[in-house]
Length: 209
Image 1: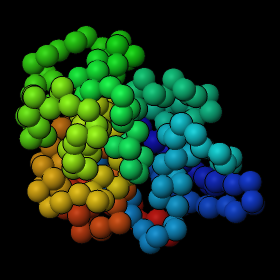
Image 2: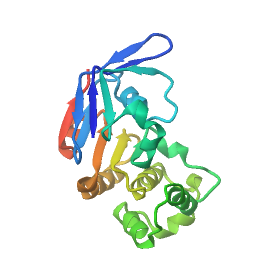
Image 3: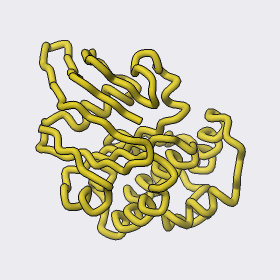
Image 4: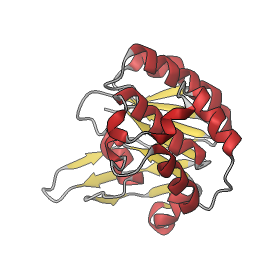
């Protein structure tokens, strides 16, 4: 699924981050941990981000069996990437139902009302919430909506950067149970500063230094 060898990020100010070789197999749930500033978010952003401003050097950088530069924007057909604070990206001018409709239409997915209802239920979200606008929701609800939008896209790879930050214990429990429920259907990469949380949930943890 992912194979990185001699991977290095370089920014315009000449700051650089080098990574140990990383291999993630298809179907794995892998956690990424490490001290603040070690490059967890930078690594994900360089591989999957929409607005990555640095450059990369590598001997090998393959995602889904293709070189990352060759794959280009095609990767978004198969990957859902939730960066930090991704709930802030919800459009305040449209309701949650419209967010779902746009996700489905832009990814050429067959509309499945029952699946949407089942996913809402798994995330402990009421169907009435679909009529709401983002400003009407709590932070935990928005976090779960973003997760729903990512999953209904049917990605082969789900990438989550700090999905456990700034949410209450109940929301965290719901998200953990949801991820456990869907983990066998796709590859998942998740960043968290909480090593114990990662260790309990993922198949293995890669510690960046």
